[in-house]
Image (cartoon, rainbow, N blue to C red):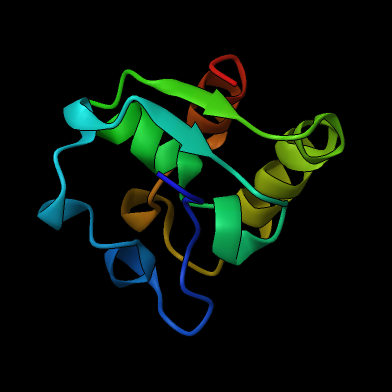
Length: 98
């Protein structure tokens, strides 16, 4: 799979890629091309809320800012906490899988 971002013009579950048309268990490799929200901000949801068990690759510079930018994304999100797609723990867990 190439990239795993969020749609910047949508909110909540509507901002995710169409994960319902694929079987996450069948994805063996996820390649993140670069760090922009529309390319990798769906990763914590994909790794922690689906059956994805494949490998994840991204460049070292992208990985080095991944944690900081996504934690900031969670903190500044206007979405109520019970409606957020992922939380700080999901970000941390997804980082450990890269």
